[in-house]
Image (cartoon, rainbow, N blue to C red):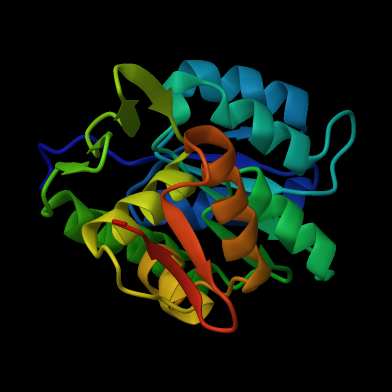
Length: 229
């Protein structure tokens, strides 16, 4: 186990006490840790450090966490990085905005270090299970490649953010089966991550914008399916 590289975590928060608390507990668990006190610096540090996990505050000076997350998701080296929002804000629009720009989890303050460590570990467990699945699906005129998170659509390569890709991949793996929003939340985000059902609608809309309307069908009052017809 000692031969394995340490998992790298970037802590982004403008409150020094929170940074110190998280850094102490993360290092205690064996993580390699870097930190940043605002969003602009965080993007620069993340580009060089290339963390496996980013713990990101929303309310920060200079640049808020939502915009910071959006910029990070545009960096190719960070496409598989887990981004967990840590915030004192619990309004629905803040949560939807966080998942809309590519967050993997959303945790409200005050932060309980042990619970946070469990959430991080759960993200890696789910990812490990996904990696054991088939890496490529060929369906209709799409080749959905899990290793690169890309879609080959009649020779055109489309790159999707992680959660949008996972949503499409899951539906394509189970064609013509209707899944409710709750089913999709459980399978894509996991039972231990609390996500609003509206987040699924936002991600479906974004997938359709990129690959077209002819693949994912809305079954009114029930949910969504990948349509083979």
